[in-house]
Amino acid sequence: MESKHPLSKIPKTIGEKGSDSLTKFIGSWTFIIVLSILVIIWMLSNVYAWIHQWDPYPFILLNSVLAIINAILAPIILMSQNRQEKRDRLRLDYDYELNKKAEREIREIKELLKRMNKK
Image (cartoon, rainbow, N blue to C red; front, side):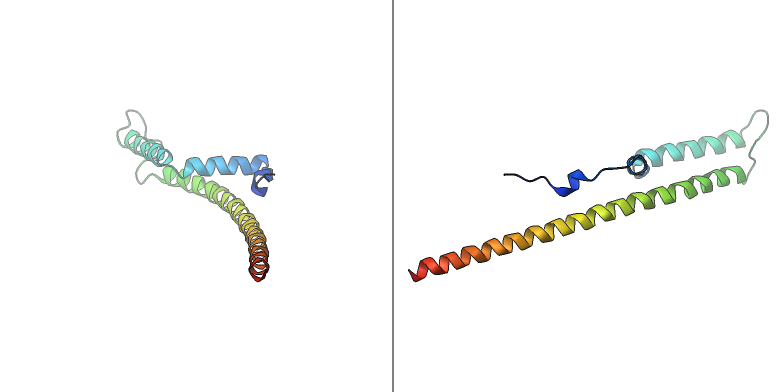
């Protein structure tokens, strides 16, 4: 009889699913490249603006936007890390119980072998 791993039964809330998927995207090279391209486009369009510069040098609005993105993403990343920590703790507990069971079985086998050797 094969038992399922207890971590496969942990339900995820919508917020947890969202934070996990957003954290997965934020921690990718795709996000870094896209954000870098957007920042460069923002700066170039303001430096070489044809009509009006909406955010002239030193790009205070850009700095504010990046600070807001940072303020929003930091708690989302922390939520995802907290969830991963819970999963790791559950995995450790499961492994510990499995190891205890294996140790009991090994002891039983050793006792059985001792009895067999005595006979």
